[in-house]
Image (cartoon, rainbow, N blue to C red; front, side, top):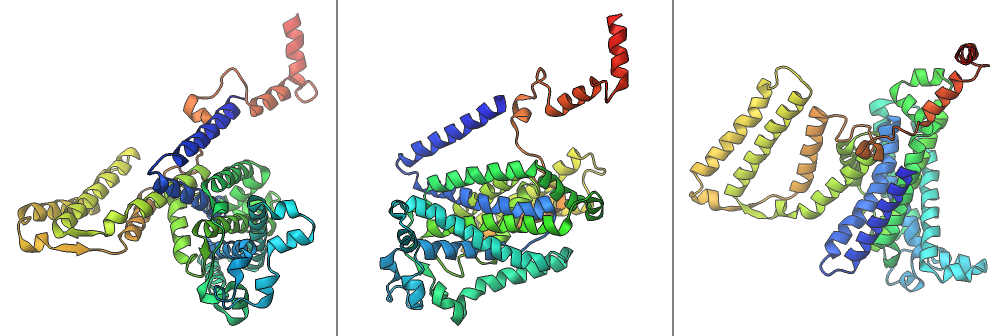
Length: 448
């Protein structure tokens, strides 16, 4: 009861904070960042089901998000945006009949057709179903493979799905490389993303601690042992792949509504790369870690623009020195916390030596003309994320959270006066004379 009350109170405080931020001046950037964290958090948690909880490396998540984005765009596109001068490649059927509003009115559901929010819920659900259907088609044959072979196959399927909208036969529905623009943006507001994000987190947390979640973890640890215990490998793998694809499609629909447009470049392989960085940084198998890693990646991408601005060579040398010294300090801390000996290996001195060398060069030659010359480095945000991923893989493969979850018991401690369900079952077994004959004897001795 305590944990439930604390959870409800936390959700209420978060909703209140969003309400206050939405009515404050100068907070549009922060609201956009939070919206992206919610959207990409859904995609990261869904990918974490396969890569973390099931232990299968999948590289085609961007394809499922693209399917969700296109389905949502086609169903939510207003009639005025379907005109030929805006969507030249759309076929007559796609322009006139592929309309969720027209379908609902044909069924007599005018009330739903008049509500953008209700139509958006239906569109997201259909987008998830479309992605899940493709997930079954992709997952059923490819999940028979293992390791790198499976990763290559999923990457290939993801790229096929991404490039398919440009094919002439499919361009009649997707508008080809021009994409689809004019998607209603009010449906992809921060409130919708916040609500869907909470529902997805609740679903995956329930799934993780259910019998299905334990079966997924058993497959991750040892497929042979799991199959010997009666776990259906093919069924559970396809189920996890389907669920992951469904919620990836939902995330793609939310992102398309947020951007108010979608094309083949919206969901390229870098989407899967960022999601992999997020779940690896936060912790494979941890829902909390996936959300934490997503927040870090999004904040770096949004607020890391200063890394790609024009800076003097002096700033570059100082920054390089700081990175090298931070890497040295991080490696020493990790080895010391794990009680590894020696604490500092010879390779670690390379980081420290380079950091000191760059710092000395910056200080000794800071007045030189070549040191004051401005240099601009493009792609530094992606490079920074790649470096973070490399450091995580080398020094802390389990990520920041490992496989643990943020729970109220870890914050406030467990309730000692209230036994857990496991303790209740154990006490019931010990006190049952039919199951434990010694219990009846103990009761007779106590009464005597």
